[in-house]
Length: 418
Figure 1 (cartoon, helix red, strand yellow):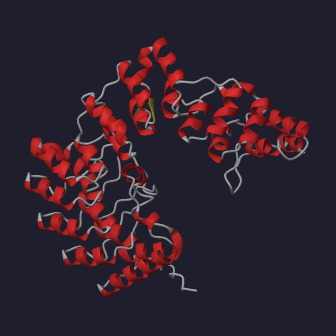
Figure 2 (cartoon, helix red, strand yellow):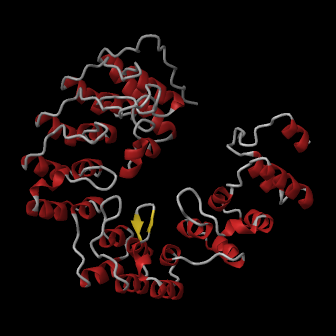
Figure 3 (cartoon, rainbow, N blue to C red):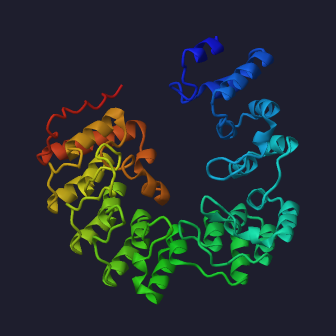
Protein backbone atom coordinates (compact mmCIF):
# COMPACT_ATOMS: atom_id res chain seq x y z
CA UNK A 1 0.00 0.00 0.00
CA UNK A 2 2.83 2.40 0.87
CA UNK A 3 4.47 1.72 -2.48
CA UNK A 4 1.16 2.32 -4.27
CA UNK A 5 0.56 5.65 -2.51
CA UNK A 6 4.11 6.78 -3.19
CA UNK A 7 3.70 5.88 -6.85
CA UNK A 8 0.70 8.20 -7.01
CA UNK A 9 2.67 11.10 -5.53
CA UNK A 10 1.89 10.91 -1.79
CA UNK A 11 3.70 13.68 0.14
CA UNK A 12 6.06 11.95 2.57
CA UNK A 13 6.69 15.22 4.45
CA UNK A 14 3.03 15.94 5.20
CA UNK A 15 1.92 15.64 8.82
CA UNK A 16 -1.38 14.58 10.33
CA UNK A 17 -3.48 16.56 12.81
CA UNK A 18 -1.11 15.52 15.59
CA UNK A 19 1.89 16.84 13.70
CA UNK A 20 3.28 13.40 12.89
CA UNK A 21 4.90 12.57 9.56
CA UNK A 22 4.64 9.15 7.87
CA UNK A 23 8.20 8.40 8.99
CA UNK A 24 7.35 9.17 12.62
CA UNK A 25 4.25 6.99 12.47
CA UNK A 26 6.27 4.19 10.93
CA UNK A 27 8.81 4.47 13.72
CA UNK A 28 6.06 4.24 16.33
CA UNK A 29 4.75 1.12 14.60
CA UNK A 30 8.08 -0.59 15.22
CA UNK A 31 6.78 -1.41 18.70
CA UNK A 32 3.38 -2.62 17.54
CA UNK A 33 3.09 -4.34 14.18
CA UNK A 34 5.38 -6.89 12.56
CA UNK A 35 8.93 -5.45 12.91
CA UNK A 36 10.01 -6.40 9.40
CA UNK A 37 7.04 -4.63 7.84
CA UNK A 38 7.62 -1.48 9.90
CA UNK A 39 11.30 -1.41 9.03
CA UNK A 40 10.46 -1.84 5.35
CA UNK A 41 8.01 1.05 5.60
CA UNK A 42 10.63 3.36 7.12
CA UNK A 43 13.22 2.32 4.54
CA UNK A 44 10.80 2.97 1.68
CA UNK A 45 9.96 6.41 3.03
CA UNK A 46 13.65 7.20 3.47
CA UNK A 47 14.33 6.16 -0.11
CA UNK A 48 11.95 8.84 -1.43
CA UNK A 49 13.05 11.64 0.84
CA UNK A 50 11.15 11.16 4.08
CA UNK A 51 13.08 12.89 6.83
CA UNK A 52 14.12 10.69 9.71
CA UNK A 53 14.04 13.57 12.17
CA UNK A 54 11.81 11.99 14.78
CA UNK A 55 14.53 11.21 17.32
CA UNK A 56 14.22 14.61 19.02
CA UNK A 57 10.48 14.10 19.36
CA UNK A 58 10.98 10.64 20.84
CA UNK A 59 13.51 12.01 23.33
CA UNK A 60 11.12 14.77 24.34
CA UNK A 61 8.32 12.21 24.80
CA UNK A 62 10.60 9.85 26.76
CA UNK A 63 10.07 6.92 24.38
CA UNK A 64 13.03 4.71 25.29
CA UNK A 65 11.79 1.59 23.49
CA UNK A 66 11.05 3.48 20.29
CA UNK A 67 14.45 5.16 20.41
CA UNK A 68 16.11 1.76 20.74
CA UNK A 69 14.14 0.40 17.79
CA UNK A 70 14.96 3.43 15.66
CA UNK A 71 18.67 3.19 16.41
CA UNK A 72 18.58 -0.50 15.49
CA UNK A 73 17.23 0.56 12.12
CA UNK A 74 19.48 3.61 11.71
CA UNK A 75 22.51 3.30 14.06
CA UNK A 76 24.17 6.42 12.66
CA UNK A 77 21.45 8.61 14.14
CA UNK A 78 23.06 8.35 17.56
CA UNK A 79 25.81 10.69 16.32
CA UNK A 80 23.82 13.01 14.04
CA UNK A 81 23.03 16.50 15.26
CA UNK A 82 19.73 18.34 14.99
CA UNK A 83 19.25 21.76 13.44
CA UNK A 84 20.61 23.37 16.62
CA UNK A 85 23.82 21.37 16.44
CA UNK A 86 22.96 19.08 19.34
CA UNK A 87 23.44 15.33 19.33
CA UNK A 88 20.72 13.09 20.85
CA UNK A 89 22.70 12.58 24.06
CA UNK A 90 22.84 16.32 24.67
CA UNK A 91 19.10 16.71 24.14
CA UNK A 92 18.40 13.84 26.53
CA UNK A 93 20.77 15.38 29.07
CA UNK A 94 19.09 18.77 28.69
CA UNK A 95 15.77 17.19 29.61
CA UNK A 96 17.48 15.18 32.37
CA UNK A 97 16.10 11.94 30.97
CA UNK A 98 18.76 9.67 32.41
CA UNK A 99 17.04 6.50 31.20
CA UNK A 100 17.34 7.76 27.62
CA UNK A 101 20.95 8.76 28.22
CA UNK A 102 21.63 5.15 29.20
CA UNK A 103 19.98 3.86 26.02
CA UNK A 104 21.99 6.25 23.86
CA UNK A 105 25.27 5.38 25.57
CA UNK A 106 24.58 1.69 25.00
CA UNK A 107 24.12 2.47 21.30
CA UNK A 108 27.47 4.24 21.00
CA UNK A 109 26.77 7.85 21.98
CA UNK A 110 29.72 9.82 23.34
CA UNK A 111 29.84 12.32 26.18
CA UNK A 112 30.49 15.98 25.39
CA UNK A 113 31.34 18.85 27.75
CA UNK A 114 27.80 20.26 27.81
CA UNK A 115 26.11 16.91 28.52
CA UNK A 116 28.66 15.97 31.18
CA UNK A 117 28.28 19.35 32.91
CA UNK A 118 24.49 19.07 32.99
CA UNK A 119 24.40 15.52 34.34
CA UNK A 120 27.20 15.65 36.90
CA UNK A 121 29.49 13.30 34.98
CA UNK A 122 32.71 14.61 36.50
CA UNK A 123 35.04 11.93 35.13
CA UNK A 124 33.85 12.46 31.56
CA UNK A 125 34.00 16.24 31.97
CA UNK A 126 37.53 16.14 33.35
CA UNK A 127 38.73 13.92 30.49
CA UNK A 128 37.10 16.05 27.79
CA UNK A 129 38.48 19.32 29.16
CA UNK A 130 41.97 17.88 29.55
CA UNK A 131 41.86 16.75 25.91
CA UNK A 132 40.68 20.13 24.64
CA UNK A 133 40.29 22.98 27.17
CA UNK A 134 38.75 25.16 24.43
CA UNK A 135 35.53 23.21 24.83
CA UNK A 136 34.93 25.15 28.04
CA UNK A 137 33.46 27.92 25.86
CA UNK A 138 30.74 25.62 24.46
CA UNK A 139 27.11 26.65 24.93
CA UNK A 140 23.67 25.11 24.91
CA UNK A 141 21.07 27.48 23.46
CA UNK A 142 23.09 30.48 24.65
CA UNK A 143 23.90 29.02 28.08
CA UNK A 144 27.64 28.47 28.75
CA UNK A 145 28.99 25.28 30.29
CA UNK A 146 29.84 27.04 33.57
CA UNK A 147 26.22 28.13 33.97
CA UNK A 148 25.00 24.61 33.26
CA UNK A 149 27.32 23.15 35.88
CA UNK A 150 26.31 25.84 38.38
CA UNK A 151 22.62 25.25 37.75
CA UNK A 152 23.10 21.50 38.20
CA UNK A 153 24.61 22.24 41.62
CA UNK A 154 27.77 20.15 41.21
CA UNK A 155 30.68 21.95 42.88
CA UNK A 156 33.27 19.60 41.43
CA UNK A 157 32.11 20.25 37.87
CA UNK A 158 32.12 23.99 38.52
CA UNK A 159 35.72 23.79 39.69
CA UNK A 160 36.70 21.70 36.65
CA UNK A 161 35.18 24.22 34.25
CA UNK A 162 36.81 27.14 36.05
CA UNK A 163 40.19 25.41 36.04
CA UNK A 164 39.81 24.96 32.27
CA UNK A 165 39.58 28.73 31.91
CA UNK A 166 35.87 29.57 31.99
CA UNK A 167 35.08 33.27 32.33
CA UNK A 168 33.55 33.77 35.76
CA UNK A 169 31.67 36.89 34.64
CA UNK A 170 30.45 35.60 31.30
CA UNK A 171 26.72 36.17 30.80
CA UNK A 172 24.18 33.87 29.21
CA UNK A 173 21.61 35.15 26.73
CA UNK A 174 19.39 36.44 29.55
CA UNK A 175 22.29 38.37 31.07
CA UNK A 176 22.87 36.02 34.01
CA UNK A 177 26.30 35.08 35.29
CA UNK A 178 27.05 31.60 36.62
CA UNK A 179 26.44 33.02 40.11
CA UNK A 180 22.98 34.16 39.05
CA UNK A 181 22.29 30.77 37.48
CA UNK A 182 23.27 29.00 40.71
CA UNK A 183 21.18 31.33 42.86
CA UNK A 184 18.13 31.05 40.62
CA UNK A 185 18.40 27.26 40.88
CA UNK A 186 18.70 27.59 44.71
CA UNK A 187 22.18 26.06 44.71
CA UNK A 188 23.53 28.16 47.56
CA UNK A 189 26.73 26.15 48.04
CA UNK A 190 27.76 26.56 44.41
CA UNK A 191 26.87 30.26 44.50
CA UNK A 192 29.10 30.68 47.57
CA UNK A 193 31.92 28.84 45.79
CA UNK A 194 31.64 31.22 42.83
CA UNK A 195 31.77 34.23 45.15
CA UNK A 196 34.93 32.81 46.72
CA UNK A 197 36.39 32.61 43.23
CA UNK A 198 35.58 36.28 42.63
CA UNK A 199 32.11 36.25 41.08
CA UNK A 200 30.23 39.56 41.10
CA UNK A 201 26.47 39.86 40.51
CA UNK A 202 25.20 41.83 37.53
CA UNK A 203 22.06 43.92 37.26
CA UNK A 204 20.38 41.11 35.32
CA UNK A 205 21.26 38.64 38.10
CA UNK A 206 19.69 40.88 40.72
CA UNK A 207 16.51 41.47 38.70
CA UNK A 208 16.11 37.77 37.89
CA UNK A 209 16.32 37.00 41.61
CA UNK A 210 13.65 39.64 42.39
CA UNK A 211 16.21 41.24 44.73
CA UNK A 212 15.23 44.91 44.83
CA UNK A 213 17.91 45.83 47.38
CA UNK A 214 20.75 44.38 45.32
CA UNK A 215 19.31 45.83 42.12
CA UNK A 216 19.15 49.32 43.63
CA UNK A 217 22.72 49.02 44.92
CA UNK A 218 23.94 48.12 41.43
CA UNK A 219 21.92 50.95 39.87
CA UNK A 220 23.57 53.46 42.19
CA UNK A 221 26.94 52.31 40.85
CA UNK A 222 25.81 52.59 37.20
CA UNK A 223 22.62 54.69 36.87
CA UNK A 224 22.54 54.33 33.06
CA UNK A 225 22.41 50.52 33.30
CA UNK A 226 18.60 50.53 32.99
CA UNK A 227 18.85 50.66 29.20
CA UNK A 228 21.49 47.94 28.86
CA UNK A 229 20.10 44.95 27.00
CA UNK A 230 20.91 41.27 27.33
CA UNK A 231 21.74 39.09 24.33
CA UNK A 232 18.05 38.72 23.47
CA UNK A 233 17.58 42.48 23.18
CA UNK A 234 15.54 42.87 26.38
CA UNK A 235 16.55 45.93 28.48
CA UNK A 236 17.04 45.76 32.22
CA UNK A 237 14.16 48.22 32.71
CA UNK A 238 11.71 45.91 30.95
CA UNK A 239 12.83 42.97 33.04
CA UNK A 240 12.35 44.99 36.22
CA UNK A 241 8.77 45.73 35.16
CA UNK A 242 8.15 42.07 34.30
CA UNK A 243 9.42 41.04 37.73
CA UNK A 244 7.22 43.62 39.48
CA UNK A 245 10.11 45.62 41.00
CA UNK A 246 8.26 48.91 41.53
CA UNK A 247 10.98 50.57 43.61
CA UNK A 248 13.59 49.68 41.00
CA UNK A 249 11.55 51.21 38.18
CA UNK A 250 11.00 54.35 40.27
CA UNK A 251 14.76 54.71 40.71
CA UNK A 252 15.37 54.13 37.01
CA UNK A 253 12.89 56.88 36.13
CA UNK A 254 14.50 59.20 38.66
CA UNK A 255 17.88 58.47 37.05
CA UNK A 256 16.56 59.63 33.70
CA UNK A 257 15.02 56.57 32.05
CA UNK A 258 12.75 57.59 29.17
CA UNK A 259 9.29 56.20 30.07
CA UNK A 260 8.67 55.04 26.49
CA UNK A 261 12.11 53.48 26.04
CA UNK A 262 11.42 50.61 23.65
CA UNK A 263 12.91 47.37 22.37
CA UNK A 264 13.64 46.86 18.67
CA UNK A 265 10.03 45.67 18.28
CA UNK A 266 8.66 48.79 19.96
CA UNK A 267 7.80 47.06 23.23
CA UNK A 268 7.77 49.63 26.06
CA UNK A 269 7.71 49.10 29.83
CA UNK A 270 4.04 50.12 29.79
CA UNK A 271 3.24 47.25 27.40
CA UNK A 272 4.71 44.85 29.94
CA UNK A 273 2.98 46.48 32.89
CA UNK A 274 -0.33 46.23 31.01
CA UNK A 275 0.27 42.59 30.26
CA UNK A 276 1.20 41.70 33.82
CA UNK A 277 -1.48 43.80 35.49
CA UNK A 278 1.13 45.91 37.27
CA UNK A 279 -1.17 48.83 38.07
CA UNK A 280 1.29 50.60 40.41
CA UNK A 281 4.11 50.23 37.89
CA UNK A 282 1.80 51.57 35.17
CA UNK A 283 0.91 54.57 37.32
CA UNK A 284 4.60 55.33 37.76
CA UNK A 285 5.17 55.16 34.02
CA UNK A 286 2.11 57.23 33.13
CA UNK A 287 3.02 59.88 35.70
CA UNK A 288 6.47 60.04 34.11
CA UNK A 289 4.95 60.62 30.68
CA UNK A 290 4.59 57.15 29.15
CA UNK A 291 2.12 57.06 26.26
CA UNK A 292 -0.85 54.69 26.59
CA UNK A 293 -1.23 54.96 22.80
CA UNK A 294 2.28 53.77 21.88
CA UNK A 295 2.15 51.01 19.26
CA UNK A 296 4.71 48.29 18.83
CA UNK A 297 6.49 48.14 15.48
CA UNK A 298 6.39 45.19 13.11
CA UNK A 299 9.94 44.38 11.96
CA UNK A 300 10.82 45.51 8.45
CA UNK A 301 9.66 43.07 5.82
CA UNK A 302 7.24 41.29 8.13
CA UNK A 303 4.01 40.50 6.22
CA UNK A 304 0.80 41.99 7.56
CA UNK A 305 -0.74 38.58 8.21
CA UNK A 306 2.11 37.63 10.53
CA UNK A 307 1.60 37.08 14.23
CA UNK A 308 3.72 40.17 14.83
CA UNK A 309 0.90 42.70 14.52
CA UNK A 310 1.33 46.14 16.04
CA UNK A 311 -0.62 46.85 19.24
CA UNK A 312 -0.69 49.27 22.17
CA UNK A 313 -0.78 48.75 25.95
CA UNK A 314 -4.58 48.81 26.03
CA UNK A 315 -4.71 45.92 23.56
CA UNK A 316 -2.30 44.03 25.80
CA UNK A 317 -4.40 44.63 28.90
CA UNK A 318 -7.63 43.56 27.19
CA UNK A 319 -6.03 40.46 25.74
CA UNK A 320 -4.52 39.47 29.09
CA UNK A 321 -7.73 39.91 31.09
CA UNK A 322 -6.44 42.87 33.12
CA UNK A 323 -9.68 44.80 33.81
CA UNK A 324 -8.15 47.30 36.27
CA UNK A 325 -5.39 48.07 33.80
CA UNK A 326 -7.90 48.67 31.00
CA UNK A 327 -9.71 51.24 33.12
CA UNK A 328 -6.45 52.93 34.16
CA UNK A 329 -5.18 53.22 30.57
CA UNK A 330 -8.43 54.60 29.18
CA UNK A 331 -8.59 57.11 32.04
CA UNK A 332 -5.03 58.09 31.15
CA UNK A 333 -6.01 58.84 27.56
CA UNK A 334 -5.91 55.56 25.64
CA UNK A 335 -8.47 55.45 22.82
CA UNK A 336 -10.77 52.60 23.78
CA UNK A 337 -11.53 51.73 20.14
CA UNK A 338 -8.00 52.06 18.80
CA UNK A 339 -7.17 49.19 16.47
CA UNK A 340 -4.25 46.84 16.13
CA UNK A 341 -2.56 46.72 12.74
CA UNK A 342 -4.92 43.88 11.78
CA UNK A 343 -8.03 45.89 12.74
CA UNK A 344 -8.87 44.49 16.20
CA UNK A 345 -10.04 46.64 19.09
CA UNK A 346 -9.75 46.02 22.83
CA UNK A 347 -13.33 44.70 22.70
CA UNK A 348 -12.36 42.12 20.06
CA UNK A 349 -9.33 40.99 22.03
CA UNK A 350 -11.17 40.61 25.33
CA UNK A 351 -14.01 38.76 23.59
CA UNK A 352 -11.82 36.39 21.61
CA UNK A 353 -9.49 35.60 24.48
CA UNK A 354 -12.45 34.82 26.72
CA UNK A 355 -13.92 32.56 24.05
CA UNK A 356 -10.96 30.25 24.41
CA UNK A 357 -9.12 31.52 21.35
CA UNK A 358 -5.98 32.38 23.29
CA UNK A 359 -4.43 35.81 23.28
CA UNK A 360 -5.48 36.87 19.82
CA UNK A 361 -4.23 40.03 18.13
CA UNK A 362 -1.89 41.16 20.86
CA UNK A 363 0.24 39.45 23.39
CA UNK A 364 1.24 35.84 23.52
CA UNK A 365 1.26 34.98 19.83
CA UNK A 366 2.44 38.41 18.72
CA UNK A 367 5.60 38.69 20.76
CA UNK A 368 6.11 35.09 21.76
CA UNK A 369 9.87 35.37 21.30
CA UNK A 370 10.49 38.33 23.65
CA UNK A 371 7.84 37.18 26.12
CA UNK A 372 9.22 33.67 26.28
CA UNK A 373 12.64 35.14 26.98
CA UNK A 374 11.10 37.16 29.78
CA UNK A 375 9.58 33.88 30.99
CA UNK A 376 6.43 35.64 32.06
CA UNK A 377 2.99 34.79 30.79
CA UNK A 378 -0.17 35.65 32.74
CA UNK A 379 -2.18 33.67 30.20
CA UNK A 380 -0.55 30.42 31.30
CA UNK A 381 -1.09 31.26 34.96
CA UNK A 382 -4.78 32.11 34.64
CA UNK A 383 -6.68 29.19 33.25
CA UNK A 384 -10.10 27.65 33.41
CA UNK A 385 -12.79 29.45 35.36
CA UNK A 386 -10.44 32.12 36.71
CA UNK A 387 -9.41 33.00 33.19
CA UNK A 388 -13.00 33.19 31.95
CA UNK A 389 -14.02 35.30 34.92
CA UNK A 390 -11.15 37.70 34.27
CA UNK A 391 -12.11 37.99 30.61
CA UNK A 392 -15.80 38.54 31.38
CA UNK A 393 -14.87 41.31 33.79
CA UNK A 394 -12.45 42.82 31.28
CA UNK A 395 -15.02 42.76 28.48
CA UNK A 396 -17.60 44.38 30.76
CA UNK A 397 -15.13 47.17 31.63
CA UNK A 398 -14.27 47.72 27.95
CA UNK A 399 -17.97 47.95 27.06
CA UNK A 400 -18.69 50.32 29.96
CA UNK A 401 -15.99 52.61 28.59
CA UNK A 402 -17.54 52.62 25.12
CA UNK A 403 -15.56 49.79 23.59
CA UNK A 404 -16.88 48.30 20.37
CA UNK A 405 -15.80 45.58 17.93
CA UNK A 406 -13.68 46.51 14.95
CA UNK A 407 -15.33 46.74 11.51
CA UNK A 408 -16.49 43.35 10.29
CA UNK A 409 -15.48 41.59 13.52
CA UNK A 410 -18.58 40.36 15.37
CA UNK A 411 -16.50 38.50 17.90
CA UNK A 412 -17.46 35.28 19.59
CA UNK A 413 -19.38 34.84 22.87
CA UNK A 414 -17.54 33.94 26.03
CA UNK A 415 -18.66 30.46 27.15
CA UNK A 416 -21.23 30.32 29.94
CA UNK A 417 -20.30 28.67 33.23
CA UNK A 418 -21.42 25.10 33.72
